[in-house]
Amino acid sequence: MSDRHFAHWPSNLPRHLTVPATNLYRNVEFSAARYPDKAALIFYDGITTYREFDDQIQRLAGYLQQDCGVARGDRVLLYMQNSPQFIVAYYAILRADAVVVPVNPMNMTEELRHYVSDADARVIIAPQDLYKQVQPLLAEGRAQAKSQPEAPGLRHAIVAAYSDYLPAETDLRVPAFVSEPRQAIDEPGVVLWADAMAANRRPGPLTTGPDDLAVMPYTSGTTGHPKGCMHTHRSVMYNTVAGTQWIGTPMDGVSLAVLPLFHVTGMQNGMNGTLFVGATVVLLPRWDRDAAAQLIQRYKVTGTQMIVTMVVDLLSNPRLGEYDLSSIARLSGGGAAMPEAIATKLKEVCNLDYLEGYGMSETIAPTHINPLERPMKQCLGIPIFDVDARVVDPLTFAELPPGEVGEIIVNGPQVMQGYWKNPAATEAAFVTIDGKRFLRTGDLARTDEHGYFYMVDRLKRMINASGFKVWPAEVEALMYHHPAIQEVCVIAAKDERRGETVKAVVVLKPAFRGQVTEQEIVDWAHDHMAAYKSPRIVSFAESLPKSGAGKVMWRELQAQEA
Image 1 (cartoon, rainbow, N blue to C red):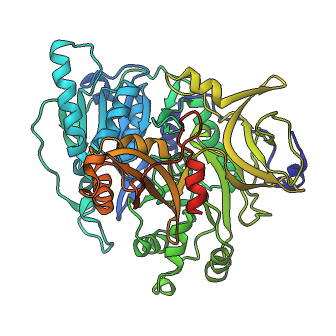
Image 2 (tube, rainbow, N blue to C red):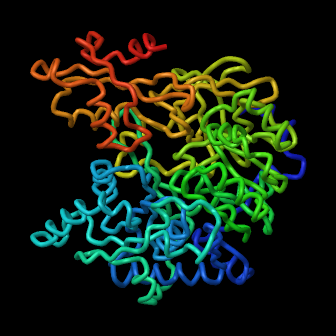
Image 3 (tube, one colour):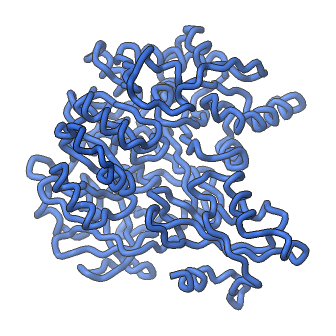
């Protein structure tokens, strides 16, 4: 392990971090005891205090246990946009001794089916505007239960209306899916969030601790199916605390949570870290540059995270000068390098440095962050507390000197236990060096003479579209459901706005040639998978290049596209 980065270690921080050896829920319990009347959550001017927040957690946890049969270690799907209900549900699942499985709300029924099946989930918490995606799976689960009570499948859905948490009046622009009034759903296995709360249940004693599973975000690989990353309360707690210490989150700070909370970056910094210190979370469920600026000004937001496309949109707002953004002391992000021109403009307009970091679902957010005292542009930063990160030769795993490109491998307290029910993938993801277990990130990088890490490329086959990670094999697997597609290869195409976008090279079955257009395939894909991963571009080909072993040579297609 190189120690070059220690020369630039934050002067006020130790190199080792001691974190609470408790269930993650305890963080909220303690904050509620300390600051009962303080705003925990703000949603379009609707305020939930810490006392109210903890009470709602208890009610929902009790309902999950007593009415939904949730037991210790059960996986519960959380399928929502940023909202008070997402955060209440997240901590209620933990309080019920269960495991949070956060799901991207852009996913559709076919994609949800894999999460239900793989996680063996029987309960889902979802918003009313997405219930139509859940309904078929719930019906299937009920049908199975009639003949086989112990069969897998959904049994219960708690359905929330975001509007339940809106104030009577607000001058903020509220999206229609948020303001939609609560709708009644009279179907077996379904209860409305409001009714679950009104039942006023209380959970049993908290029995799970630091080494029990807490959160299982899913990530994909080259196999085409998302894999569950097993994180304990200890590993989630580590980055919850590490982030607040590194960036200096004050207990009277205010965090604008605009990155999605289902994703580990928004989850840890925008939610878990903020609540750990007893600060306030201001929620925005969908990016809106004017609403974001209004909220920053109104609630004196001190810190936020934005991906590059958000920063670009914020700075291009002709009304930006009308807002007072001076309260922001920290603007951080990751997922894609910040272009030099945008970083310069951000400094000129807002007097802010963009603090970049690096992490992944397997590490429940950061393993690297730039030091506040010496941030570098277009840089992943340096390894944080207790992290041994190296750039190695992908074949020999020998550590490489500064300037040479290799794979990032990581050892640290925040690294996952492994992939859920997938020992082969777990074994492939780790390598042991000198008795230490390192996660192979699949990302290619180099270090400089000061120990800072810089991303170069991806060893994995992955597309980064506006900060969303898209795995081509997963998209291909979904596209094969189209009756006209004989073969398909998904690659990245350059996109001025998204950085990269998804392109599908398709070979049609002979009977469909001349009968189906490229745009029809684009439209079908948009209707059958999450918008961020559905191909924006489709091109037809007579055949796909293949190796001697018959494998599609996607790199050749990618090179042609480049």
